[in-house]
Image: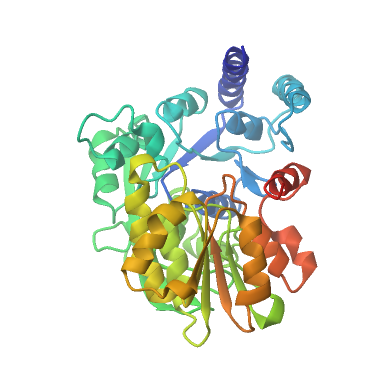
Length: 441
């Protein structure tokens, strides 16, 4: 019965959204990828807002990129809970806004998340993109694709084909913005009717970036376009090659929509990232906390570890949670990050069964000191050791893991020097606090 009701609600929201977008002639910027989508959503919004009225699926600290989240974002419904009463309220507001309210935006940036087969088809049935961006591809949510993969078929290819639908569905007057550095993505240019423009760090990209300098406090690079070169400097958040590639994508869309190149650069240099994505905080006992607790995948894990490695003069503690929804790829992905962690960290704390089953034995096999690695089943249990025993003073602490059931922001919050900073962490509000406290029961 619950499934039937859910399908009816989604169908209703799908219909409202499709008509609303068409009636108000809203230009849709659809972006997909495995890593960096939310950062790109915010960067695109920042760049495009220099010239246009722009909306986006990232609101109130989190992304509304699901089957219901996208309609709620487009119809300007504020989501703050998930009870039956809340759903009734949301449907009433969505219906009211559909009939009465005119959108505040003319263009809308949608993070098109794909968790399972058919997700992209559903999204495109509501909001066919005028511009599509394919940012990255890696083994994320592969567990949900195992049933449709043919024997011996690469799961990465299966996930890629689902995400690629946004590019293949573009019309002739649309734009396909593709990551030139990734061969699979670059090749999509042959399968779309849209105009194609590429970005990347490799020679051959239409918009090419070059890295000049990366430190723990500063990124310097350049962006070349049509025989002109623009310098870019970022100090407010950590940028490595993959994050730079994300910024290049936003720059590419900006110049494609006739926003001055220098204006695009200025927008990106003043960008602020959302909570839980490599935020830095002062911690107790003169520690530095790198908060990447919002979510994780292998690629984002490796990016975070690259940042940690820059702190050569400080003891480095890595607090690492499971990567979820990987299915049969779970062992390989956790073992892959173990190879990098043992090179960087001085002390390791793991949270979750996948870390225990796959990461822990691999780290020991690679020669990491068994006395310097500590495994826990949940976040609350790990907190006591970290706060009371591991931290001596002056350490840099990376906190990174998937969001489902782990909630590693618990550790971040308890280690903050300035307790008012907790409002800058991810998953705030009564709903999430109730979820976190349930782990401690």
